[in-house]
Length: 396
Length: 140
Ligand SMILES: [Zn+2]
Image (cartoon, rainbow over all chains, first blue to last red; front, side, top):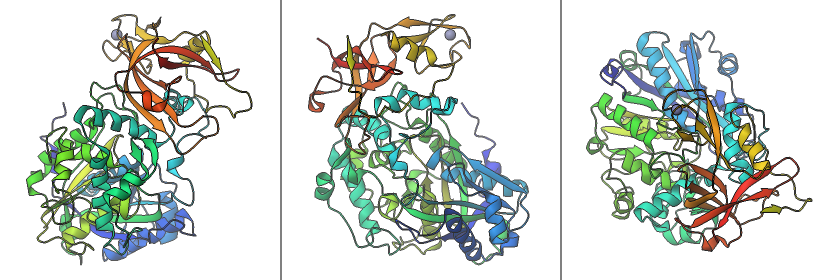
C-alpha cells in the first residue's frame, strides 16, 4: 500500500493557467504536427505568456509529435524538462502530474501538456491491432492472447468487462444508454462539439447497431481529429497571469494489481477499475476534496460502461449501483454533480481526454458552454481499463 | 478433435511470440492446452510470465489442462469485420477447471446460445500451417 502522507507537498502548489485547442473535426486537412503547434501556441497565448516563457513539455507516448519539433516550430527555444506518459488515454492527467512535479520542484517554470492527432482521418484506434507486426517484444506478446482469436479492438476488449459487469450487477443496455444520452445532451449546446445540436434519445441508443455485444455504436465515442494543449505553472506565478487559476488540488497516477493494458481479465473481480480506485484514493486524500464537494466531474467516456464503473470507483455511489445513480438523473443537465458538461468524448470530441481537462478549467473559470453556478471543485479522469490518472481542480 | 479452415481466407493476425510464451503455441500445435506452473510453489499462471509473483521463482514447467471450463464473460463481435474471421464472432473469457482464465473463441453454437456459466470443452483449430489455436465448444 502506498504511503500518501508526503503528497501534500505538491497539493495546491500549481495551477493550469492556459488552455488552447484546434477545431475538432473528422478530417483536419493538415498534419498532426501542425495541430499540435496550433494548440500549443493557443494555450500559451491564452495563458498570457510568450513561447519563450515555456521550458517544459509533456505529452502521451502515443502522440506522434516530438516536443522538440513543436518547440522549434513555435519558437519555444530551450527546454529543461520533457517527458512522455504511456498507456494511451490513461496518460491524460498523468501529463499534468509530470508538469506539476517539474514546476513544483523548479525543474521547469511553465510547462505545456499537449495531445494532437488525426485519429479519424489518419490512424484510427477503432481498427485495433489487426495489422500490428508480431515483433517479439513483451508489449506485443500481450496481444498474442487476443488478436489470433479475433479480439482486436478497444470496443471488443471493453465489451468483455461490460458483459461481466452487467451479469454481476444487473445493469442493462438502457443503463449504458443513459450515459450516452446525457453526454450528447450537453454536446448539443456546446458549439465546439462535433455533435452540436444533435442530441439523442434512449431509443436512438437502443436502435444503434451492435459493434461488440453488449456494446452498441452509441456506447462507443466518436473518432476525431484535433489538438488540445494546456499550460501548467506554480500558483505564485499563476496569480500574476490574466486568467483565474485552476488550482491543481490533487493529481495522481495509478496502475493496479494484475494490471494489463485494456485486458486485465485475470483479476478476481473484473467488474470494476482497481487502477481508477487507486487514483481516486490518492486524489481525495491529497486534495482534501470529496465527491460531495464536487461541482461537476469530467469522466473519461470512450465507452459508456466505464463511466458507470468510474462512478463506483470514485465513490459517487456504492459498487454495482451506478445503474440506479444514472437512472435517478444524477449525471445529466440539472443534476447536483453533472458529468461531462462539454458533452464528453461521446459528444464533443475524442482528444484522448485532453479536451476534458480544458472543460474542467473552463468550469473553474466560468467560461464553459454549459457553465454551472458557483463551481468550486472539478474532478477530471483519464483513460479507463489502462494504467490511468485523475485530478481535482479547484478555485483559488 | 480438430477443425480445418478454408485455405483462401487471409491468415489470422500472428501472435508475437517471446521466449516466455512460446510453449503455449507449440503445445497447441500438438493439440495440448498448456498452463504455466511455478516449479517451486506450484502456482498456475496465465498469461505466462517469466517469474512467479507469489515466490519469485524463475523456474517453471507446464501442465496439460483437461480442457474443461465455463464462460466467465463473452463478447459477440460484429464490427469491424476483419477478413480472417467469420462474423458474428464469439470470443469468451473462459475459466478453466484448473482455475486460470483464458480468452478464446467459442465455436459450434449460435451467439444467442452462449451465456455466462455455460460449460465448454477445448478443441483445436488448425488455422493454417503455422498456427493452431485452442478454441472452445459447448460441452457434450
Ligand atoms: Zn511460485
